Image (cartoon, rainbow, N blue to C red):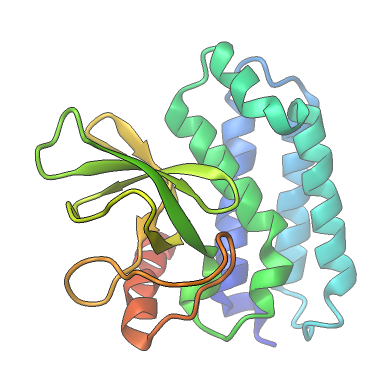
Length: 222
């Protein structure tokens, strides 16, 4: 496998670098999380230049998973984001740390998916739990979406309703008019796509739907 140019590994490499820098420059996280993040970055660089096939790289991928679990525990466990927020960490930084941790932790799963840049990020079937008008933008809506965990998605598709199941690409978080969006509803042409299936699982997507994710991934990796 050409691991040096694989978009899934390149995404993990970028996330590892950002994760290390964010933890080094965040107050109140302690000394251990930045140390673990630095070790994660070294492991991913080694993986990038390993040129191993998927089965041969399994020990390295499992080691990365263990390091990410250690990092989560060193930050305070599953409630770390609530703790970080109470200590004054910005919502955008919390969301970016969460994104990077998930990208690295789920790398082994994504490497088993088809060889497509779209799968450099996690794509999940989400169920819209609540929708409201963006307070600072007339043509945007804010949605709480269950993708196996609850995330916020800001969308310009005003037809989105509670209870709908929509594919979500968990992209790098962006702040849109004061609200952090943790993903993008996937669509083909105009409007988002509605799908059937189990919440949190990878939905079946058309080439056009995958291309909408692919463009965002490649834009980020540039």
